[in-house]
Amino acid sequence: MGRRELRSPLGRAIGLGSAKEGVQHWWAQRVSAMALVLLGLWFVAALIAHAGADHAAVVHWLHAPVTAVLMVLLLAVVFYHAALGMQVVIEDYVHSEWLKLFSLLVMRLISFVLAAAGIFAVLRIAFGG
Image (tube, rainbow, N blue to C red; front, side):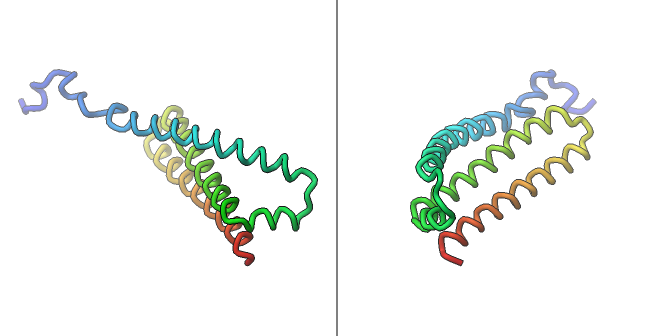
């Protein structure tokens, strides 16, 4: 009989499972949600302020450094928070290990590509490219 079999179920479980990463994931979701509330309020206020504005006015607005930085932050946080949420859904509802891993990889890749495309678009407008 090996040493592992002599340990109690609690002894084998300590340090495993959601207790290992769950708190960090939980905090990341809460912090990103708070950032989304603040950035979302800024974005909605900006949309209201620019209601009826033409394309040139919106481009001029995005040329401002503070606006461009806030838009990049908004895009990064939106896709990060969405990826965290989708990760929980995939981990909870996809039971096949290979399909779970594949789904997580595809979801992360799609989130990264969409965030990068949005950030690239904002920076291109901000720098006048």
